[in-house]
Image (cartoon, rainbow, N blue to C red):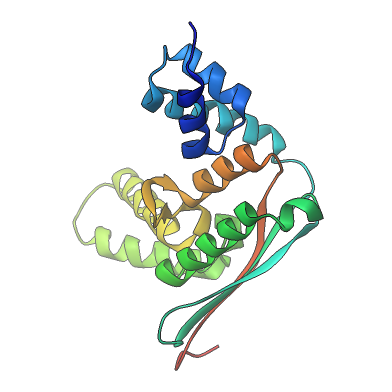
Length: 199
């Protein structure tokens, strides 16, 4: 199928994917731009998965100060090369992630970063809430596990719904950017400050 160059340009502008990838996606989807976007997202995330093991030793410290200057975020975002760290796409990613942290107040990047005593405290609260219902232990265990998973989706940055597109998690959003930028990307650390809050 012969794909008009205008369609390839439109798809490139909307996704940031390479010209050849856009052309192939449009050929695969018989010129349907919306389906081509979905196709690029799926193949891009698959390619991104392969890059996740590569070292990320370059990057930026990105800031976000909420209007009114009473809430601010610092985030260290890493990539593989100094060249990518200087690009506008990478800086925009850093800004969006800092805004995410400002809006959703995660306590950790990954599940494994949450201290064991906090997880045990949450589980104890859930178990106490449910045990009074008279349900069997195996059902209580499943409900506690479900509530704990819900807690992780609120507390862990990578598992949160991305504030600018709640169909994606933050991890999905980063993987899409890995696919577009072509390098592995990782969040090393972050700090969120609000006037009046204890450190």
